[in-house]
Length: 219
Image (cartoon, rainbow, N blue to C red; front, side, top):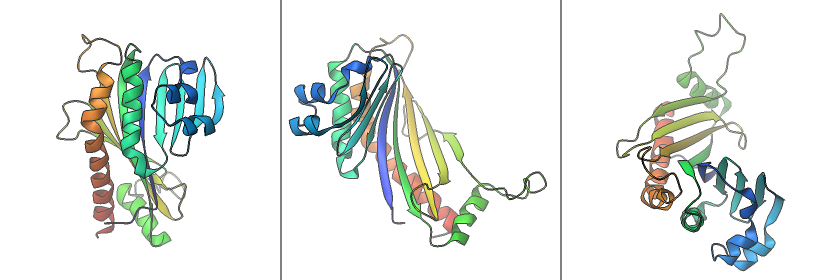
């Protein structure tokens, strides 16, 4: 198994949100984070169109049509699940049509030559050389399904790492929608889906990332 230099995870929702609700002190008053976390949160902006703040272990960004929480510390993968499930158990009448969960990894490559070889394996350059000088892989996304999923779509993204040089960034995203358009459009389905799928999403993402690099690097 290849060592991971840095990793993280996130949960995001598409729907209709009131960003002004999502404040650290509201989370603290509801028992979703500790009082000292609420007090010490670094607030970027809280307003009617956007909320953006950060604690030691997560960053929350809310727009009127999108909610995102990013886990900044891998030891908090369990609490981040509980945080989002708790929020939308309380805000269960919030319209939510889509749920995404992701985990990402930054891997250090042993040399620049090996880093280039990853790009060559994923995107052979022969077809591009007559058309463009110095072709190189900037980003690739593959779409598919996880066999255990009842619904939803998997996206695997591979890019050069922005944090380690030379390095490879791999992100695995699982995107879920309501089971049917006949279901209620509020957020009542979200906590159950997170609770059911979160651990499987995290494990699958690690398996995909490690399996991909093992296949590319033949080890």
